[in-house]
Image 1: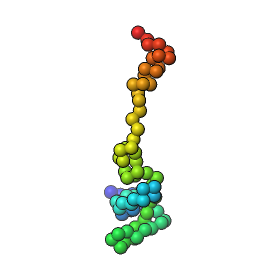
Image 2: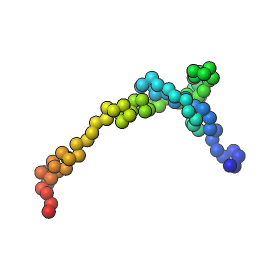
Image 3: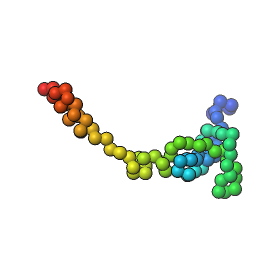
Image 4: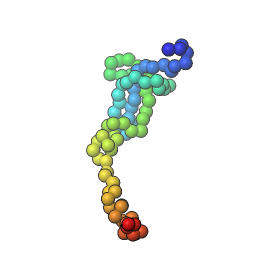
Length: 82
């Protein structure tokens, strides 16, 4: 790789403030804010709005859209084209 053109790749803590959940991973993102992690080291922290802990798809609270009802309603409204 060429020197000086790639961002730093290091350990970063991502924190989901809504779910009060944080995880340590590697990323090119950086932050001015830091947090002391469970291992005693200090890492940059990036706050996110949603993660796998709070996303409806992963938590099982996702709503299923009624697409069949929408199609039937469209056909009733505008008539079925044959």
